[in-house]
Amino acid sequence: MIKAFEILGTTVVSLQDGDEVGTVSRVLTDRSGRTIGLALEQANWYDPVKVIPFEFITAVSKDVVMVENVSSVFQLSELPELLGMVRSNPEILGLPVLTKAGRALGIISGYSIDENTGKIEEYSISKPGESTQVGVIPADRVIAIGNKVVVVSA
Image 1: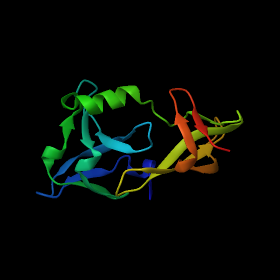
Image 2 (image 1 turned 60 degrees about the vertical axis):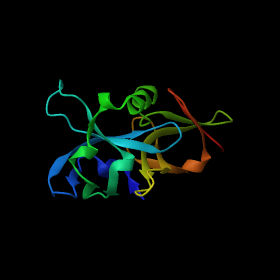
Image 3 (image 1 turned 90 degrees about the vertical axis):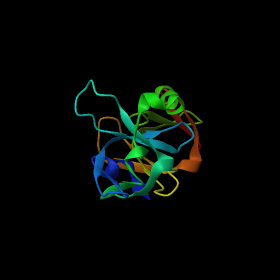
């Protein structure tokens, strides 16, 4: 398991030729709790967003992300299904966490993923405005991830 923030800023390398193909700027997730891809840093704000769908990633660590070759990198606009997922799935960091009984637990401050499957395994919880982690919620306790809130079982 690796924390999503450990992947940010990581170099992406092609196995085919050993060349650097980019640097990870964002972990893209969906509402079912899986990683759908990685976005790469843009040189300029007007450059197209480049992404690597998770199925094209051969290895993930806090040191490097490996892909088969440079053709594993796409412009987000070339992948309508992924583009639709990115547009319809909010960034989960900062979302409030509520139990199904309505008790506020804090906000999502991070999450850990399985490096092989991309499945989110757990979510870190902090108090709003603080960086200290106050708890961890296993992913199997998540009932729903909405645009404004995450609901978990008690």
